[in-house]
Amino acid sequence: MDLKDEIIINAPRDTVYAALNDPEILQDCIPGCEELIKHSDTELEAKVVLKIGPVKAKFNGDVTLSPDAPPERFSLTGSGNGGPAGFAKGGAVVELEEHPEGTLLRYDAHADIGGKLAQLGSRLIQSTAKKLAAKFFKSFADRVGSTETA
Image 1 (cartoon, rainbow, N blue to C red):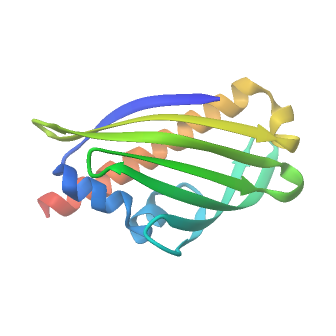
Image 2 (cartoon, helix red, strand yellow):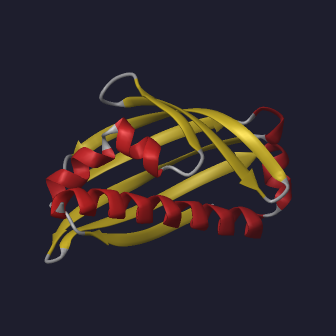
């Protein structure tokens, strides 16, 4: 499954980059996130509860950040295990460009899933993933943009 999108955030690029590395902001913005622990500048651990179709699962996952060229670009890889519901693993490349209205955030992500989740069908998984990503980025843009103007 592949996801690509872009969003303009009403804040300078350095502010957006810093927020993308702030576990408190990320925990508030990730749908279903119950806990996000920063083990180092590049390693995070998350506990997320998601409902996809009829399947509700608690995922425990690890994310590794690779700052390729901060604050312009970084990548991340992660994997999560939802027990009997299945697993997910994948990665994304995130690019931050200066924009007249703030920062243009562009991402290109890929994920593989298995277990019960994979049996739900690719259309349901894809549409749910798009909704979750949109919800995250809207929350993130509202939070980061509002801290700039407040």
